Image 1 (cartoon, rainbow, N blue to C red):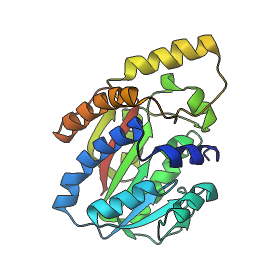
Image 2 (image 1 turned 90 degrees about the vertical axis):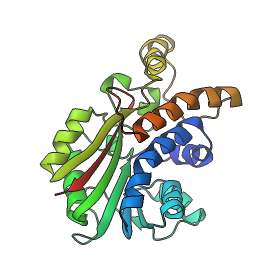
Image 3 (image 1 turned 120 degrees about the vertical axis):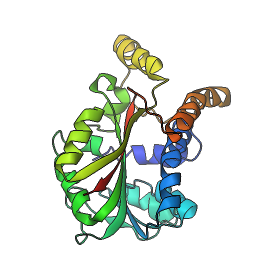
Image 4 (image 1 turned 30 degrees about the vertical axis):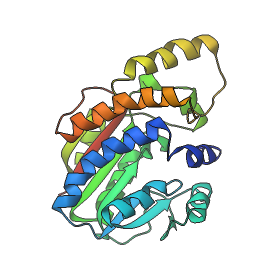
Amino acid sequence: MMNPAEFANIAAAERDLWWYRGMRDILFRLLDPMARARRFDRVLEAGCGTGYLSRLLAKRYGWNMVPLDADSDGLKYAHEAGTGSLVQGNISALPFATSSFDALLSIDVIPHLERGAEHLAFVEFSRVLKPGGVLVLRAAALDLLRSRHSEFVHEKQRFTRSHLVDALELAGFEIDRSTYANSLLLPVALFKFRVWEPLMQPAPQSGVQPVAKWLDRLLHFPLSLEAGWIGSGGSLPIGQSVVLIAHKN
């Protein structure tokens, strides 16, 4: 499970911080055509944290969202913000009947599972989706990018695209889109995580911190470029996150 202290940082930053805005840009560019082409009546967010994304998805697409999280700290923030239909539960043992949902999103959750436990979660994702149901998955990429932030939030693992594709196919999914994201800032991340942090030895700490407005705009710009590229059908060969869209066979 994630460090409970991080929920306060997320709740304070996720609306405006460059990383959240940019990664939502990419996510929405992937979801928009899907939402126009097909109606999703009931959608599960498996690992909703503060519930902010579920509220955005319900407003943007009119989806009946069911936000689930294992951590009561995250659900407390979600409840206080007015998120409805909240469920506390484990993504590896979902408290729902088989074929309950038209779509399922799991955004940056599986890195908090012990290595190998993602397979149990993917089997559960397949079980609760209707035949043909859509899975949208995002996860932190590349063990090389583990950082003091990773330690602070209790991140257990990071993924390659090929590992996730293989694991999802084994669980009964067919991959529709897969790409890395947050790629253009990879040189900056490598310097920070592999040079500066080993040299300076800072204590584990959250990376979800406000920055100056000019820097926020500067850091958001590469993500907006990636959103345009990915939204037009392109993909990126390496990056700090992996994003996949799949459907249940």
